[in-house]
Length: 89
Image 1 (cartoon, rainbow, N blue to C red):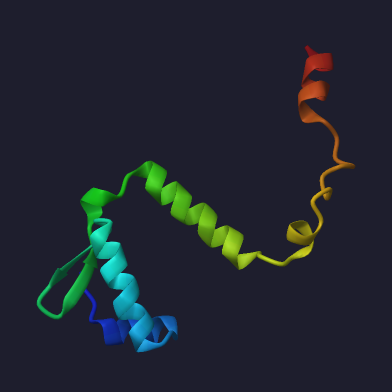
Image 2: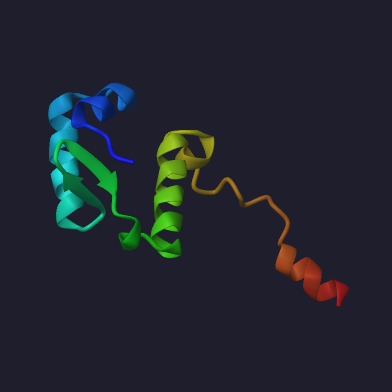
């Protein structure tokens, strides 16, 4: 399945010029391919590791600036699960 840059710009609500630049960068890295007017994901370039990184980055961007992002010690009061497991064994 392929998309025109204008379709991507509309769907993503970003400037058309940004889409073209980003697509060319992704093409240089082998992540997308271009045929005629259409751009598509290069499935062969993706593996589980790449998909995981993209997923993690997406989550990080979605929650950027939230309480946990602003407070590095948010987990200081949580119980140590590993220590609890060690005492149960």
